[in-house]
Amino acid sequence: MRLKQIFGRKPKHRLYLGACKVLPSEKLAETWELRPIFGPSDTELERKFGEWLDLPSLEPNQVVDENDLVADVYLKEYRSGQDLSGDIGGIPLLFFWRPRAEVAAIISSAQTSKIVAKESATYKLPWGMFIRLALTPRALFLGVAAAGSQQTDFLIGNALISLFSKLREQI
Image (cartoon, rainbow, N blue to C red):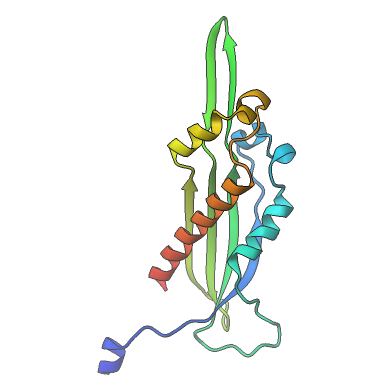
């Protein structure tokens, strides 16, 4: 081996955006949420998701280098957070879950389509912020999800930052 290969820097990669999708979720907590009524729809999340990433797309006839990579990024799960209350025989019950976002990415070579890295990251709303949101009149009286559009941006943005930090270490 040459010393340049041993002590040399990692090659610089250009990253392009491939697929950018919001995957459907079948979790029980999401079926109880009021997100379709009060929160962002999947199509709105998908549109925002592409805007947040702000990566160039790979054109079909574009010449690529051997170090060029394509990122397929997915929003695997998004929960806007909810609290439900009820009672059984006079015993009060309270169910709640914090807002969270889970994102995943598959990085592949632009030339060969060989998978270079796979990673996922989850970000949950901190407990203090969740409690403050859950105690607002909107959440208490209307039963509206704890995470509004600002919290949605915050959750998914932090999950993406965490995801790309992990990917940066792998590549």
